[in-house]
Amino acid sequence: MPGPGAGVGIREAGPQDADLLANVVHRIAAHYEEGLAEPPDVTADRLRRLRIGPDGLVQALIAEQDDRVVGAAFFNVQFPGADALPCLYLKDLYVDPTARRSGIAQALLSRLAALTLERGFERLDWSTDSANTAAMALYDGIGAALLDSKRFWRLDRTALRRLTDAGTATQV
Image 1 (cartoon, rainbow, N blue to C red):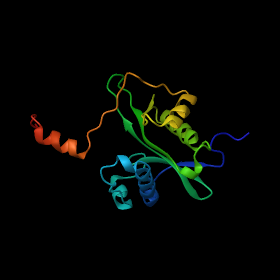
Image 2: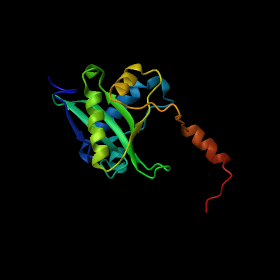
Image 3: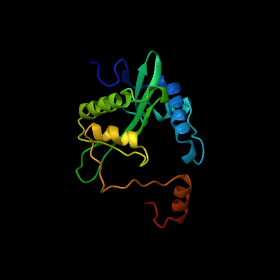
Image 4: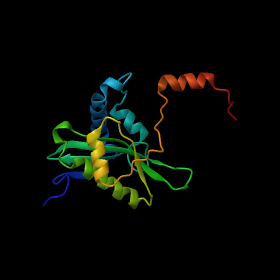
C-alpha cells in the first residue's frame, strides 16, 4: 500500500524557484487573510535578493504532483541557547486546499525530519494556530510533543517601531 503523499515529489527549493515560492507565499497569505494587517510585499526579485537555498535566508521544501505545486514547507536554522545545538524551525507548512488530507503534509514533515538529521541537528520545532485541530491531530499522529511550557511571542512592524522608539539601550 502506498505511503503518505504517494506520487508526490519533494525537493529543496533553489534560486530557480523564486517565482513559484512568491506564489506560494501569496497563497499562504490568502489563507490567513483575516489576520494580516497588510498584504505581504513578496516578489520573486525580493526572494532572490534574500538568497534561496540551504545557505540563504529563504529555505523551503516544495511538494509537486502532476507538474503542479501542491505544498511547501518554509523553515530556517535556529541556534538555541540551553543545549547549544542548532535545530530547524518550521515557519509555515502549506498544502493546497485541493490536495489536503492526502498525506502531503506528512510527506513534507517526513522529508524535513530527514533534512534535520542530515544537517546534524537534533530537533525540529514549530507552532500552529490553536484552532487548527486537523494540523494538531497530524502532529500528534507523527509523535510530535506539544510543549505546554512554551508560548509563542511576536512583535509586528508597529510594535517593532514602538519598541525601537522607546529604546533605552545605546548601541556600542
